[in-house]
Image 1 (spheres, helix red, strand yellow):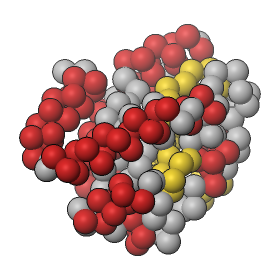
Image 2: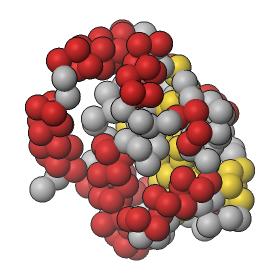
Image 3: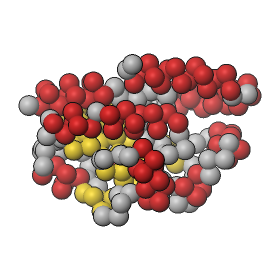
Image 4: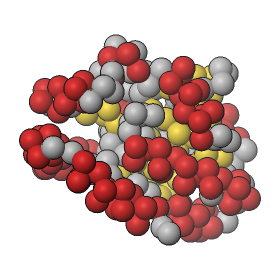
Length: 215
């Protein structure tokens, strides 16, 4: 099953479990984000990828420049361990990690959550790639991905127990759009996936194709 099909199947099951009033708030926030033009402001193919130095789930700080020394980088932004769609996407990336590495690329996943939350996620899914903490979303802002939740959706997330105030280190309202970039050795973005819909993610097969085209 493709990642897109797995995400869609989960979405369909999830919709049956969410009360109608909460669904409406989520759907309205999604429409407003799509209409805001946020995705159009995100970096895309041909742009120079902004550098970063971020703490990883296992402690050491990881810099983009250091990763690029060893070859291309697949950089993915996700919302956090509390997001089931993110968990599905990260598990899928783990399943394709060997294929990514075989193409000489390094994989790094970035979220606004604190390192302890990233560590729990890494251990839960046995992730073999870098899981980095962008507390405050400064890196996501540089890539044009950061946005603030509307009040009513933030209240829904609080009601659902996501506790973003804690897991995002005091930056509860700011999240990144789901995005994945393939960055070549010179730091240029050669392939990009950006979507305002958090139920959609880059297909691993498309990432592998993009890496093949770099060779």
